[in-house]
Amino acid sequence: MSHQAREARADSGSAIAEFALIGSLLALVLAGTLQIGLVIHVRNTVIDSAIAGARQASLADQSMADGKRLTSELITVSVGERYAQSIIVTTVKRGQVDVVKVRVRTPLPVLGLWGPAEVWDLSGRSIAEDVDSD
Image (cartoon, rainbow, N blue to C red; front, side):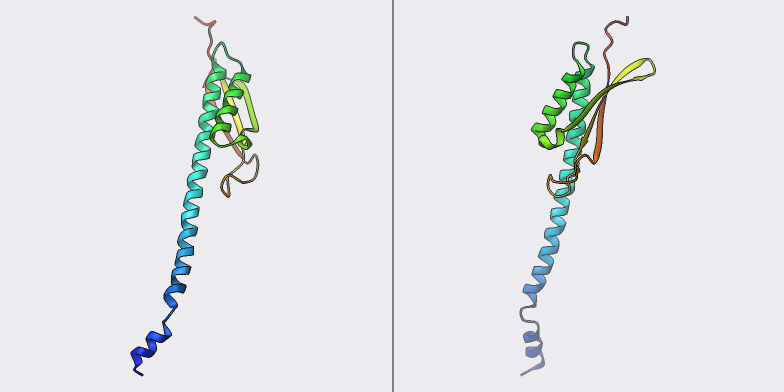
């Protein structure tokens, strides 16, 4: 038996093992990339919902409850009810204007949409309408 034939026998089956190791590593990288994309999507969606709720609450004919309701509905439809559990709507004075702030404390999606509750503190703001000033 030649030297080359012995080396070929020693390496037989190693391609399957290499494929399994590399394949699992690539699958892990792909899953991590998808999770990062999901985290960014959830963050942007919650912030956009908070901004929409702040705009709603800042209208002259709307209330803080209307802004909270809209924020809750948008988040629930987009990413789930679990993410719309803690919503606080307040008004703060910034110089001469009132600013409506919608604060949402949401879970941080670590594995899919599951993760520790109320870790993220995201918010949206809008200048309140003032119909009395001329």
